[in-house]
Each structure stands twice: as structure tokens, then as C-alpha cells.
Amino acid sequence: MEMKIFIVEDDTAIFQSLKENFEKWGMQVSGPKSFQDVLSDFINEEPHLVIMDIQLPVYDGFHWCREIRSLSKVPIIFLSSRDHPLDMVMAMQMGADDYVQKPFHSEVLLAKIQATLRRVYSYGEETSDILEWNGAMIDLKRGMIRLDGKEAELTKNEFFILTVLVDAKDKIVSRDELIRKLWDDERFVNDNTLTVNVTRLRQKLANLGLGEAILTKKGLGYVAITL
Image (cartoon, rainbow, N blue to C red; front, side):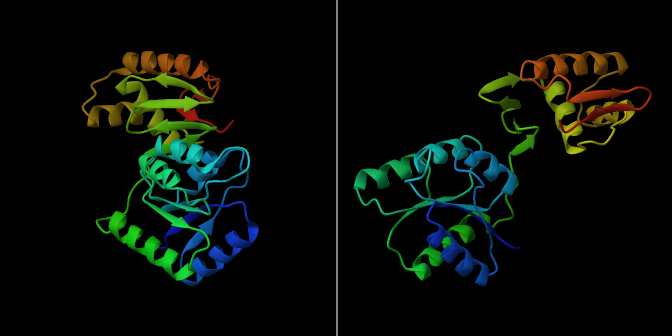
């Protein structure tokens, strides 16, 4: 399995050096397109590990560590020139897995990355707990959807319907298929109950500005579209 490393580093020379070294070891490397919204790029890339500098444009690494930890348990290694013990303590308290000081030896960093990857993924590949849809983050563990700081709490049926539709993004899911999936999951519904649940789901999505993101295809079913 090719491991994906997400490097949040604004020093272009350091980023390119790390990228070249890691790719020699068969790793796939990416970084944020914008330091204004690192979280969206992290979600899109779905990396196996994050390397995070502390001093960054716009928001510091601690901020992005908190944001990532609110969504994912992916391992995070801080890479920073700051050597104050409080920085290291804060990094660990926020959920970092390791802290490497600059200047550093690439071999040492690589060894730490490989050790962390072995520890985290030795018992099977981790699956993401987050789905991204139209800029919204669907939290599969908490059963909620968040967009621009707003959250919508969904019932089990509403959440199940949403995830089925988003998994089939831009493809029609028939009413019969939705009912069958709900029944298979021991959520006993009939045709009228499905209509009620979809209506309530749309109302909650409307509060996030996504009221038009689930369409009814008459005689066919429903589709979650990309806006």
C-alpha cells in the first residue's frame, strides 16, 4: 500500500526536499493548496500521516492540529525550529504523535515516520471517518454534518439516507433501494416513512445552505448532487 504524506510547510525548499526524499521511499506526498484552508485540502487528500510546521501563514500549526483532530485520528508529526519545552508539551497535548526539531536529519525523520506508520496501520488500513460533500464535512462517527461552523444533528434514518445518497454522489438511488437498505439495516420503514425522512433531511440541510443539494427524480428516486 502506498502511504500518503500530507506536509504542511510554508518553506518551499524544505517541502521539496522532503517530497523528493519520501517519494524515493515509495510514498505519495502532497501539501495544502492554500494556507487559508488547510483542513479542506487535508480532507480531500485523505493522507495516512501529517507533517506539520508550527509557524505558518494565516493560522499556526497548533490551530490546524486542533482542526484535524476534531475530525480524524490520523498521526501528526510536528516539524519546527521552535525548541521551547512548552511548544513540545502543547503539541503532544493537542494530539501530536511526535515532535521533531529543525534543523533535522532526513533519515531520522523518515525513521520516525516509518515507525509511526507501522504502529498505526500494522493491523489493517484505517478508513476515514469523514465524508466531504459540497464543502460540508459529514462525520460518520457522530452522525452529523457541518458547514462553515454550522452543524445539523440528524436522526439515524436521516443520516443513513444522506450517507447512501452521498456515497452514490451524482447518481440516482431509487426509493426501493433506499427502503431495502434501511430494512437490511433493521430500520423498518415504508414508502411514506421514507418520504417524511427525506423531507426532514432536506429541511435540516437547508439550514446549512444545502437545501437544493438532494433532488427528486420523479419516478426514479433521489440524487445527491454536486453544487
